[in-house]
Image 1: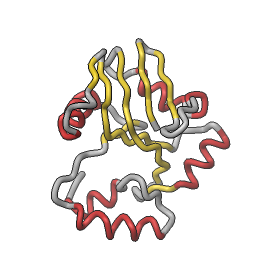
Image 2 (image 1 turned 90 degrees about the vertical axis):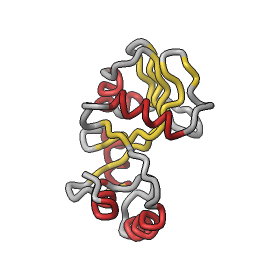
Image 3 (image 1 turned 180 degrees about the vertical axis):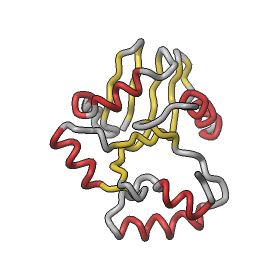
Image 4 (image 1 turned 180 degrees about the horizontal axis):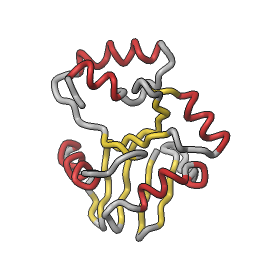
Length: 152
């Protein structure tokens, strides 16, 4: 999902077709509107998170159908534009550093998706194992990060 912020106006857009789903996910749109920026274009992944920290596509489907996004988390992993500046030419690690600064101190339903360097060989098998159990394959889960790299 992409999030476009412009002077307090938030649009929550599907990545491939740009369909505006802001009305379906109001708690997330509200949290995005409170970020300390005037304009931004963010990239992330919407996830349903179970109490044990694993992700669930079924939670997203239920939230979309009922328009109740209270149990969803928007994992943010890229910042493409910020206050009139095109950041796309910057290395990802620099864009993520700016994103982390914006999200510093911000809580649910927004979560920064950290950049893990040097742990890919540990993440991939664990992610595949979690996906086979019904978790979302898109985002490493909170529990997965803790188990693999001692995060959190």
